[in-house]
Image 1 (cartoon, rainbow, N blue to C red):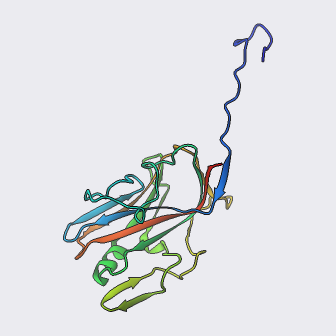
Image 2 (image 1 turned 90 degrees about the vertical axis):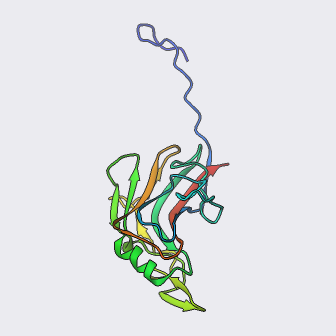
Length: 199
């Protein structure tokens, strides 16, 4: 398109095409491993989709991220809230240590936390209810077992936090007093919301 002389540029470029996306009811999730007998001061989530901090390889049950710390192009996401789960069979002492000491921090492309709360405030979502021991295995759920029970991440306008492609984000659980699990302990953090994928 040619525009009037006297103002540069003389030719306006064609606007970039926007990818056509479809909404999917698909949470994003990532897991970190706290190794047995190792002192743990912090864990990071959504930063490495391939391996745990110990070097062990992750599988699809551990993460469904396609890129480290960002959404790959052209994916976008409406973040409604967070849920978190410890692995079934964890020792009760390890569960207590994790929840008594843990503080969750959430970051969007900055060094200052966007959110900082005790992990006790992060419900387990759809899960067995309460604390149950079956054949010496521990099953634990934090909060009411409901698909609508999550930590709400809506903004001041009560809208979902929209995450663009290639916008960085991560979760960190800090333990001000380090914890030392008696057995391998896994924590899975789920981003509940709507994933927008290419048609």
